[in-house]
Image (cartoon, rainbow, N blue to C red; front, top):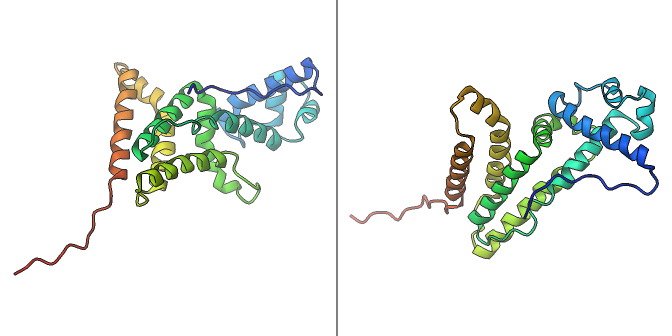
Length: 222
């Protein structure tokens, strides 16, 4: 399955000019929120990016938080394809496929990837202000893929949470760190780093999917 960046469909109630301004606002907001986070971007910054007055921005979005929510909705729509139509059947194969797709998505959507990192770090501080996390459905769908594979294989002792941590945490931070690491080592082969990273992910997945050793050993006969 090809991982792409989805755009919001045009509303019949919006004229082309209004839709164009709205889309430009969202695209500029992607970049600004990725670079500076929600708190680091002002309404003035957002309005200036498309050449409209601060008050005019409220015509498109009632508040900065509503605009940020619209960005998160775009990310959620884009990322939602990753857990769909997984061809692998066993738990390690499913997780490997999820990791490869998620890595590709990060590479195709670097601004979105940065916002996901910020959400992972900053969202807990906003839990009292919001009713849900926009990326929760993505996590739930990945969990369903892994749990279905566990059920097929009869391996319910595999730790789904650890597998999710491997996919979401490792892939996200690898994607964010890669430009810096490859820049420090100007001889670094990015394609080689990517292959070695996926190999390391596979090894971690295999280790996590191994049945836990039974500590209750039979007493030795004397």
